[in-house]
Image 1 (cartoon, rainbow, N blue to C red):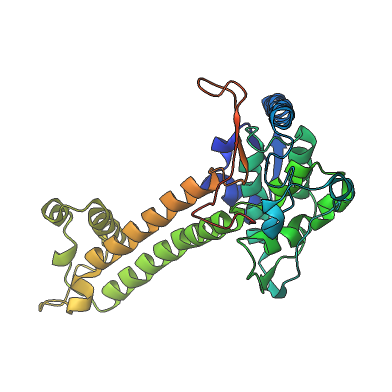
Image 2 (cartoon, rainbow, N blue to C red):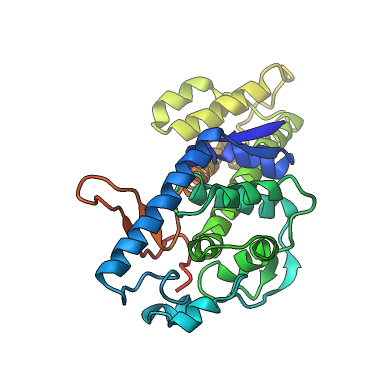
Length: 315
């Protein structure tokens, strides 16, 4: 099976489940190349126009260096000797699980496929191809104390940068942003789904084992609570306990059993919140700088320096 990515909207929680957890490959739809070619040309035209107006224009990572060097225009000599690869330090420790690293690679595509990085289609194709290879590069879990996710992404995409000649904006597009955070919350959300289901089944089995009365699991109670998640948990327990032993204890169940639907309702609410966060983060553009296509009020587009709230920006 293969996951088809036509735009960043296709980088979803379900796509992470298929690609990261089940090892499926990724293909890029034909329109991705067309969109990225347009973005690449637009960024080139924007930079040329800015430099024609102001040879000392500060365009982060393009006319300047990264990080602390972002406040000064590179000399011609410095620009010519710009490192080919990715300028990151090393981190250490046990590697992240392979499924998490695959999720990071997938989340990185969301920043590329709509053209906001100004990168060539070949870069997105190379990133997608990493998911066809086994294994993906190791990403250490510790020592990532630099700016944002630069160190982790340097480990992940360092080999790719050695295999192909990157343009300056493509270097920035690989190591800036927050795909690691998006991948981690997505992984936690997917794990939460299975654990929540297992926990509900386990507690329902416990209720059945002690033959607790089922009054606290009457489906009609949900209408009194005013919380959809508590109601869903109630209905889940009611279904799990349906068809159990007809003989039940005559005295009321322990309070720890009677509150199960409401406790699990809150757990379901937290799970839903995690899934919403993961969904928004996975499809979010967190590049720095990010290119906005030409439009009304911006005939040439705009290259905007951002600091992502969900991660670092490499400066």
